[in-house]
Amino acid sequence: MFRTLTLSLGSALLLSAAAPAVARGDRDHEHLRQAAAEGQVVPLGKLIAEVRARPPYSDMTYLGGPQFDAGRMIYKLKFMDGSQVVVVYVDARTGRIVGRNP
Image (tube, rainbow, N blue to C red; front, side, top):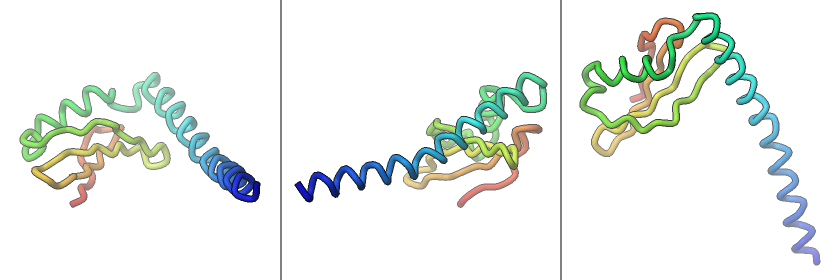
């Protein structure tokens, strides 16, 4: 019984900790939709295609699952270069690459 209670409490804590992240993600997506409707951002499909067409990313595999930071208006795109994941940061307003890791 103690184990069941511990598992239940642990699950509740995990769910309550995840709720703010989900809400923040929803706000980011809503902000992105609004900015796209107002023509303030490059459409995601076009932005990905433009980055994939540029060397050295044209030789890498795009992994999908873009992430968006509404506060900075930056997309985070992931590519696979051999056995290394390369993260590319792209300005959603201009499509300009603003950073890369590594």
